[in-house]
Length: 207
Image (cartoon, rainbow, N blue to C red; front, side):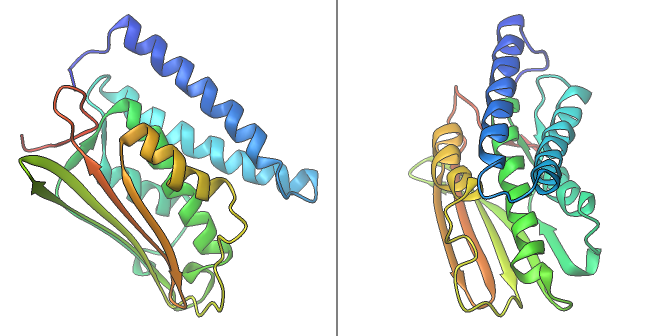
């Protein structure tokens, strides 16, 4: 990550943003039964995009703080701080990767509110991360866990946009290894994201 964004990088970010917007519009209409429902879901997804780009514009080229991405999504959904946890070392996500990761957090949060642990009075969601060195390479391990959903089946079984983000977009955009599963407690997602020297996806902010 550099302190400044070059014109070419800025153009790439704009193209990526419009590509994501087209994808959001296309996928949001799937399974919607009314204009009101479609508008509400699209507004939520565009709101997540707006939040991450506001963060990125504060210090162009420096990326986004991972804690702020996670915490900001929970707070934007008016979730009490007693119902969630965001914890891990200080990490900055590169601008080109922050959008995809933010959208994944948004989809998981909305799903938890609608079908999962956060739809119950005592449910809880936890996002924790750590940094690990494997074969000389740095990896960011990030876990999303829900507790207290009490669900008998997979709430993401419909294979919607959230699944596509986690199973296809994150591996493509972040070179991430992803695992998505469900127990009666709720959704569990594990992400393993490489730093990739020379083509940085994230960096430890202390470095």
